[in-house]
Length: 141
Length: 384
Image (cartoon, rainbow over all chains, first blue to last red; front, side, top):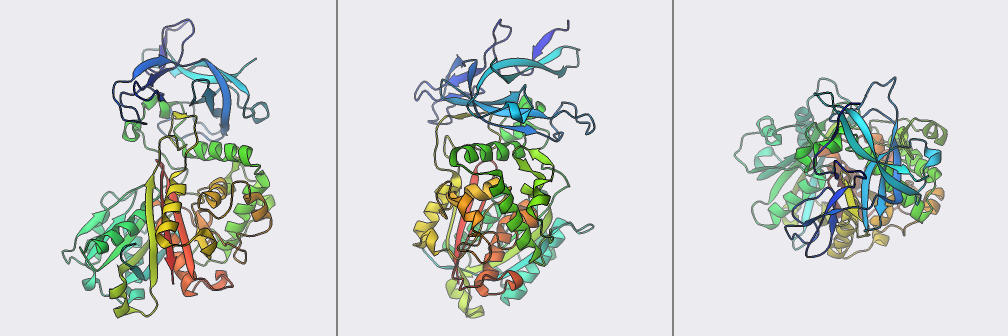
């Protein structure tokens, strides 16, 4: 099995048995931001602390990407073989909506308010042949 | 406004596809039309501003108009660029830096969906966001529309009614790009792009230019007896919590959109309310946003759009005609010029020069609104 590497350092806890998305929490106003950033976009306070976000929440909105995206998309873009993919915002109990790819691309199986959980999927390989991992959301069983 | 600003000349290079014609040539054409319409010689112009996405240096256009040494500002604020141009021109006049100037918007985009470019750092985002296929405006439009439909009981039929209306209006506009009316069946059978939005619910990138000669109301009297007055021009950026494109996360709270902010401020400055507006051009990037912008601009409450569209209230003969020239859907979007196209159409309606699409009642007050990335909106209120 190929070695797995995260698509970007600092996006989610890795390596970890149950990886979580990494956000920043403002020390002054508690505002959460994902991905983490130093200055708070709400109150401008600097030096937010790192927090791990819940792995499940509810689907706030969604769509299906039906055409192959232009650059900088690095997934397959052949029009004949392109597989549409789902995209959505999942509202987590902490009060933040996080955007991500969805593992489901059948519109009849997606509904606002349904329970979703964090998962990870292989998104191509890097130059060294490692599997590149990114996060996604899947409907809860 | 603390001083009356007038628009005395308008010009438009029709939007569409013009092979072999550069964006700047279209800008020159629009500028010359505006000067001619105003009866103003270029030598009388004291300042200029221009905006474009594709043209690296919009102020280069001056060599085709006349090297008279005037100050020239290049502006870019995404889809709201046209609004910014007019605002800059009026600020110039109000500051006393000049009495009469010109605002010019021009663009020429490649075919296909807008790309955000290959470097996400330029948008303040990680490269992963683009690489994994999340950096696409149509997805945002679709997700915002879906949530709004869910919250306010808007149906897919309502989306299609907006598109039918805008293409019908486009068919009456000789300067429109898409001049063929489309029925609901054609729209509903067009391919799904990003659910629930189909191909004919969307506008497309296009080419074109628009220009306005702007001056103080006092100077306007030298040139015309019936200038268009700019009663308000307000530009707003997003507040924390506003749901906007290219957002990997958003706080779970609801705040007024940049359009709602700009609209409310504009009504206050103009001293009127939405019930006083006789014609409106709003950003119809796709049908969902025209529906949401109807409420954000105060023309109805959230959810009332369903009945209004069914009753034809936003058609040319309706209570509040919206996007009478076909909007972005029938004209496409040359980003730098789009906002000035809206103002151009409102000026025609106020002057009674809109031909087959002239509103069949007195038109005294017009309204325009542009909205775009990364959460900017500009509203103008105009009167005859």
